[in-house]
Each structure stands twice: as structure tokens, then as C-alpha cells.
Image 1 (cartoon, rainbow, N blue to C red):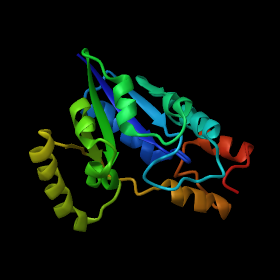
Image 2: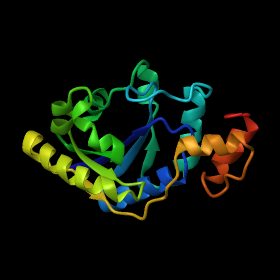
Image 3: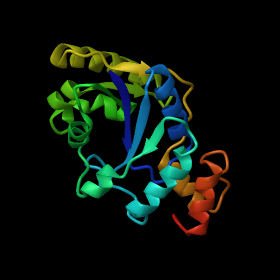
Image 4: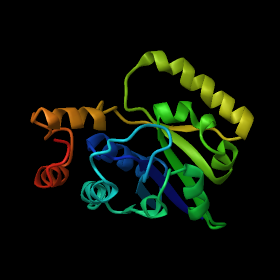
Length: 200
């Protein structure tokens, strides 16, 4: 059984928190390989519209390209339209594959509001990683994990790592102010952003 990780997102831009999460996901779920999949159009939030998909895809290749076992896929961009996780899972599923779906805290708490949540839980094993240190969410997380186990028959497991409290929104705001982002994004991503005059 091949263990495959799926890490989707807007990645506008990919930052060091994304990279750390991917590495921890690979290690703690014993993945054979991991797909990083930039969305075409995310269904859950408005996207930074000044940067098109080709730029986000190339930034992901630069951010994750040097990590063994990680593959950046353009499957959702090629599909076009709103990127629904259930469609990606259907495309990647197979009898010899076990799929693991990585979510952030906010996404994990709303999994049951996504398109076809029953299918998502049937086709994959959702796991989550916390990139924030807000203790007020602890109770909600425990409650949701219990609800999902009762409703869908699967336990949502946690990837444990020290949170890097970085967001793409914060990176974009810092870039617009022309402040230092060297500790927030991989150097090759920063060079690509500046060479292509993105987020200005």
C-alpha cells in the first residue's frame, strides 16, 4: 500500500511555514511521497488576484523542489474552476493507495462544510497541523475530532511541530511595504517574487 500525502492550498506565496509543515507531514505519516497542489480557485476564501496560477505553481516548485519525495502538481490548475478537494481525491485514489490529506486548523474545523465531506473521509485520512498557538481553539478541536469520528468513522490525527506563525497574507503585506521577508519565505521564492514584481 503506497502512502501518499496531499497538501493543497493557494500558496500565494508559499512560505517557510508551508515547507516546515510538508516536511513534518512526510516524516510523521511515513509518506512514500507527497503531492503539493496549488489551487486554481479556492472554494473557501477569496484569493490574492494579482498573481496568476502559473506564478504560484512556479513558486511552489522553487519552495518544495529540493525536498526528496515531494512533487508539485498542476492538476487542479489544469482542471480549472473552483478546486474541490473531493475531485482531487477521486483523481488520485486507487486500490493500492492510501491517501492522507493535510489541513490547517481552520480547514480541519470546517471539513464537514466542504463539498462531499463523506467522500473526503471515505477516500482519505485527514490530518491537521497547527500553525498558531491559540489555546482557545483546543476545546473546539477536540470536539470536532470527536464529531468526525462518530459521523465518518475516522480519527483526524495531528502533525506535531513547533508552530511557525507565518501567513501568506502577512508575507504579502510585508512585501508591499518593501520590508525584509528573508525569514518568512525561501530565498528562491523571494528572488522569483522580486524578479517578477509580484505583490507590489
